[in-house]
Length: 140
Image (cartoon, rainbow, N blue to C red):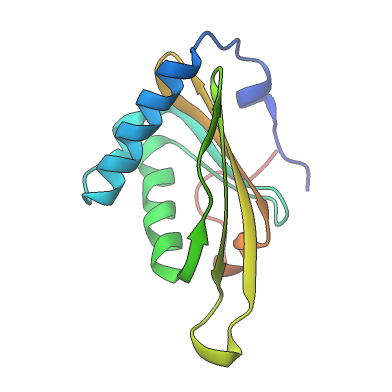
């Protein structure tokens, strides 16, 4: 199954480091306050679990997928967000289950921004193991 990479590879990015940081600060703040963070996504946003090739599209579908994913994450840590022009990178880890049965899962998120919105997120690592089924559109 091949992943459609066109959503973030074909866009030109004109978002400064400072603007990227501001957008993501507001995004994570809204997420932390249990607000509707889908407003920070472009209309054609994609979330891709690279290792498992799971892909979801659209602001509300991506938001709902992330809420479900976060609900399955047990503990863990995040490193500091690294920001560049129109891109950001976040590494972390979590457990697949509580207690000794849990496996540590590592991940790196790559955010792409354009027009003051998050246009795509790619998740590298084994975090997709927490999601047993793909929701939204299938990869093409």
